Image (tube, rainbow, N blue to C red):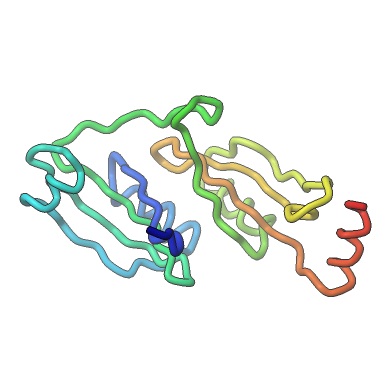
Length: 161
């Protein structure tokens, strides 16, 4: 048995329309499918008896999918703080962190952390990162990596030595 890659990341939401307004409309992630699911297969996969859900697949590119799920007639949970076991976040690559941050602030999105640039040598050197919260409180890390050229790669490697 071998893992061959990441298929998708799934987030359960309390209101799929509200989450689509965030991920599709504010962050600009294209939607490839929206559907309603129920039945024995859904119950078997989720382990939730009587499961009925709305699901949206958002195309992150390179075959990667962000799946949003709203359990209809279900209860919505509470997102865990990042320092609790079992919590997590979604990391999204962006091209222009400052422009996106301005757009999110204008829309009233909760900004959990301000942009910070990573200065430690290694793969993340030069990346600018920050965290916002989606409408259900899920942490979304926005990452703008620097454009790498042969010269900047050599300089980053020299810093590590």
